[in-house]
Length: 88
Length: 88
Image 1 (tube, chains in turn brown, purple):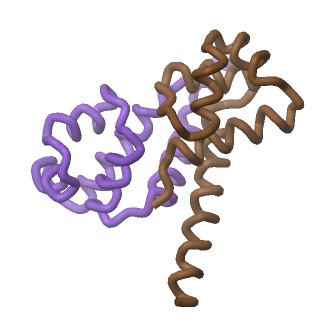
Image 2 (tube, rainbow over the protein chains, first blue to last red; image 1 turned 60 degrees about the vertical axis):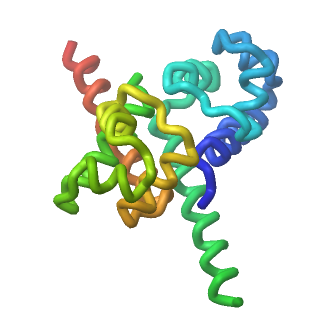
């Protein structure tokens, strides 16, 4: 199964890059370290719920809309895996 | 803003109780401690992505479907908060 932190990291990175913003900018505004945000985006660190909210605020996103994107992404990944199983 | 771990905990508890299963049963099958699962359900502990997947498997849920429920719950909570603000 996909890991939640990977799907969350991907959604955060997509939101940030679609706004053409740097890690440094978003991290500063969210009051998290650049290294922390970078690890979260790469799915290497679990974001605490509190810091995830700070990052969402910095991106002008509600947690609900971030998680709607995450849930869609997880669906796509699960369908892709099922297709591989079907084809095997 | 609502905390993600609270919405995840609520969704896990709803899935478990709708299956009429005990904390002990789900925890044992997911190979997590009963105390850990209880704290996760109450939104007091962040579940690691790995253990969240184990808990989902134990509940026969995909991560995608759990997170679809979480995303819906977050939307409802945000709308409720907006209504309170509108009424003020």
